[in-house]
View 1 (cartoon, rainbow, N blue to C red):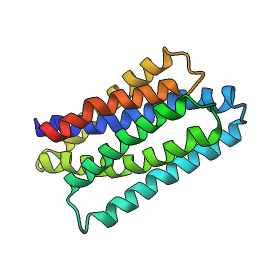
View 2 (cartoon, helix red, strand yellow):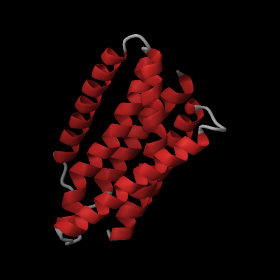
View 3 (cartoon, rainbow, N blue to C red):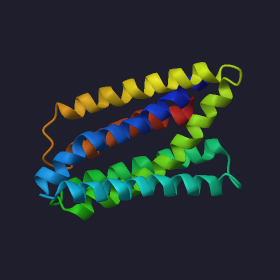
Length: 178
């Protein structure tokens, strides 16, 4: 069961990326009217944010356990998604969209790295099987969430905020009770 719980954390974090990658082109280019080059700048900024989260994770592992950092990342992600629910009621502008995503990607850097290493530690002699299972489940989970978001009309930040809140409300209890 521990492997499945950790795998659910990975699927949740992969789903965060899939939701944003599915909805963001419509929000940034169609709704906000930015060029594809500006969209590329936003994606670069978010990639750097994930990298910063991974670096923070590396530094924090000196003082905290990987499991504690997963918890911090999941709690931070839920709090950020709740803030996004509030921000979705405001007029959509680049700051309202991008700033929470920066912090969500930083939190993703905490969770994903530690959850991935926990899965590999669980199957020390079968790391190739664990890697294949994780890759398959991550792709499947991300694709399903992207499909759900793709079925929505993405003209505001509401689909993002709702999807993130639902994802973390499902996954966070697993962290505390399993």
